Length: 179
Image 1 (cartoon, rainbow, N blue to C red):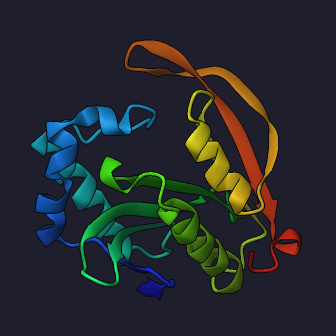
Image 2 (cartoon, one colour; image 1 turned 180 degrees about the vertical axis):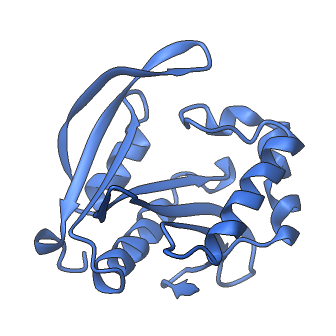
């Protein structure tokens, strides 16, 4: 699977992408708000194996895609759509970028592309996302995608050294319109 935007190519992960993820192990604070970690080569290998297994899963419930700059094929980050197994008309949006790519609009651009894919190609009804309450940049990304803030999930999960509270956003297919 491959999606294209004005500036990005979204493609499936492969084993050769391990090298692209090593900067996260060298500087794990880049993903400080994320519920998962790529802080070691073992965690990177585990993530890649999981993402690659999903490509041939039937039914496929997870789409983890590499974000590449279309001009030079450099690694920007990743975007994901994870369909709920017990509610297959709903999926969670996720994204993470190398810190050198923050603030350039790539997360919103990639998120809009995968949300469009979810509604148009997968027939989803609802796409939602959550972000750490301190992650204003991530909240802006979801707002740029037309998502509505539903509320705050208070201290719902332990994140390394504290209980994390998250903002919950969503958008319904009828609200989308291809933003």
